Image 1 (cartoon, rainbow, N blue to C red):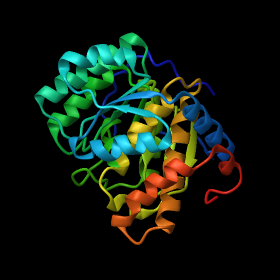
Image 2: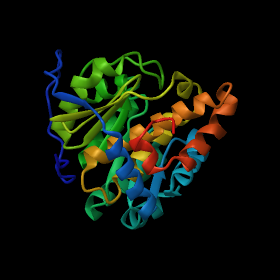
Image 3: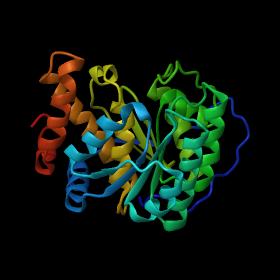
Image 4: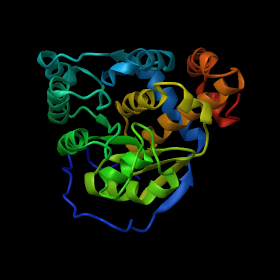
Length: 289
């Protein structure tokens, strides 16, 4: 099913107490993941990242290893012009303060006006009022995708999500229905990540069952995933498939890296190597090829 129009504005919704009924969930086919990876490698999309200052290094390295081209333009005076040049934009509210929010707001608005897909990573939304309000304001600029953990997605969708700092206190399963509702409300593809990732346009939902808990012991893997989601959205004809493929590639490479490392310290180089070495044709056979 084609993804919904990126120009669709969010619809305001009243506070909710009960999530809606879930739609159909299907494991994402590895053949689809392979074709989306091949598309990304062929185009090497320029991916503009306004991201958490803690994770800029690993985010850039992940994009480079995978075959995309990262750019970390953060000055308010430059983001408007650059959003029109980039293939996609990431807005991650992890280290948020007034000057950074002003730049993020300009970048999101410029991306919407230029037709450039942009991705919102609502880090710790639902925990603190300032960033929650900022994320809701940013959603007015029609993100192509929203990628968050269960607590963040629940909070954005209007449910009680909790959250412990940047970590989720809810499971992705518990937030799947809220993700589907958020996708319907905003027109964005919504990815709620956890033990199993769920990626939805509100009607169809792909499941990504791979990954390893060791990925949560390394700073920046989630934030880097959001940048990869943005890179896959660049030039995508079907954003639901593109976002699901982004989540799948990161999870599969996380599994591979876990098998080749002894802990968090050796995981990061193994993860970057796995992203660099994974080939589209491998995905049609086995995730560990």
